[in-house]
Length: 299
Image 1 (cartoon, helix red, strand yellow):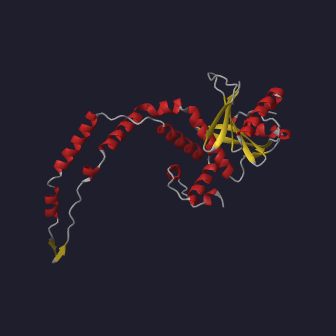
Image 2 (cartoon, helix red, strand yellow):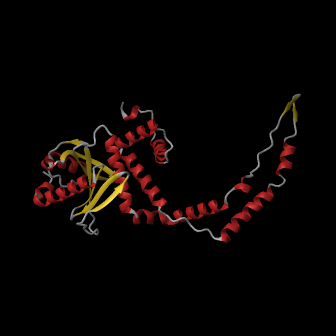
Image 3 (cartoon, helix red, strand yellow):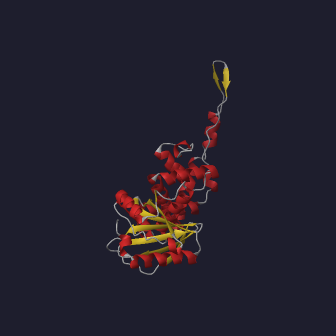
């Protein structure tokens, strides 16, 4: 079954709503799997999914605003004015409910419903929601996304790795030869990371793919270690970013990650393998690059 025969909407905006439903856990297992498969084949949807997850994670880390007593009093006063304005509503409703004659028939009129939710509403929750909304609307979203960029990037890498495991193949170009993988990546997005052959060490190169993270295409290599897949995302390093020669152990989305940088790339290795195996992969990858600089050349 092709992705377009999965019963999902074809309109991009409708698919974005489906992605929101997926993130919110509102889909059943079959629909969730169908959406994840569609995401795995559509870079635009993948970028939207990563953006939503990153924003959700950033907002979750925002401290809950403290609501002042004065603010609560003003909100409560609004409720009292609303309630007093509707005090005569039952009488007006009763008048509207009087039966009317129309061509000899009696037509029952239903009184208009009045707003009575003020009496039971939690004003503290409403006040907190208003303050949080104002906080986000004031530009805090941009601060959150920048301040938590590493965490957000890790989540996006984890989502991409998960999608690759659900797809028919985890790579766009299937080859164990760097002379094939690197030119393919370079031809698609203009950049390719080193791709050393580490099969003798137990890490076989399966190929490469293009990951879309934060609306930016990035190269990714895929290695196999026994029954485990290891995805290595290589983000081109910005000039102002400092090199981090020592790897950082992270985790996201139920996977283990190792992050480090060199003069050219910021690397993110992710897998469901045990930590010693992932650390060993990273150590051998870095050693292979140093021992064989030609592994980083396009050809």
